[in-house]
Length: 154
Image (cartoon, rainbow, N blue to C red):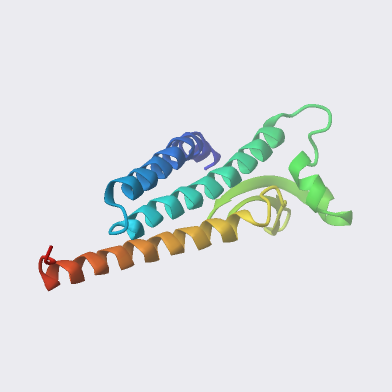
């Protein structure tokens, strides 16, 4: 499942500037009339950017966990978040994509988030994503109401 990072990280690194450019181009091209479409592109770029930033943190934690060596037990990303007895029972890890996180699995089927992803990433990605969807919906509704009203007199 962590191999999905090999696909998502480059996709996010390419999609963020593409959405940013799309939003800016829509703003320049349409002026005041299409500002909602432009806003949706910019908000989408922010959402994808924050998610990609979190993916980079998860990828770093995976690389650190897979490194091996003398200090590899318990897994290094799991050491920072756990205190006391819980860190001694770490047996594996999983990657959570929604919400984004690096989860340390313990014996007995439990687990905990290692804290590798900064706390602001998931709420920011969700907030910008929902705001982008709302901007798309509002832009489409405005376009439908403009077309139903007919051409404006010049």
